Image (cartoon, rainbow, N blue to C red):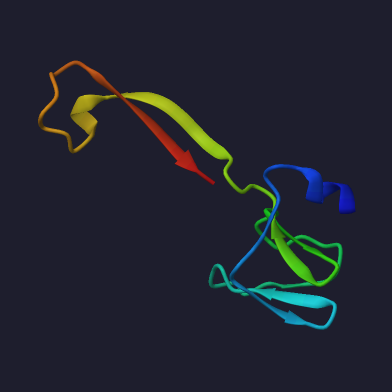
Amino acid sequence: MMELLTYPTVHEATLYEAHGDKVQCNLCERHCVIANGSKGYCKSRMNIRGKLYTLSYGDLSAVESRPIEIKPFFHFYPGSTALTFSPR
């Protein structure tokens, strides 16, 4: 479990409360209480020794080229494309 901390996408989370060896994630409305060594409902946050870590920091979940007409850009040529990406 400690080898996870060497991955570049694993960072300590900010929105949580420590309760002994358990932590409560406050990122979403579920407010998961996560035991040591377990993951939350979203499977992207994990309790490692009483601290909550995000496992997907900086990862992209989608990258695609979309038509410019879908975007709210009005100063580009019709028929061009825009690069769209979304972080996790």
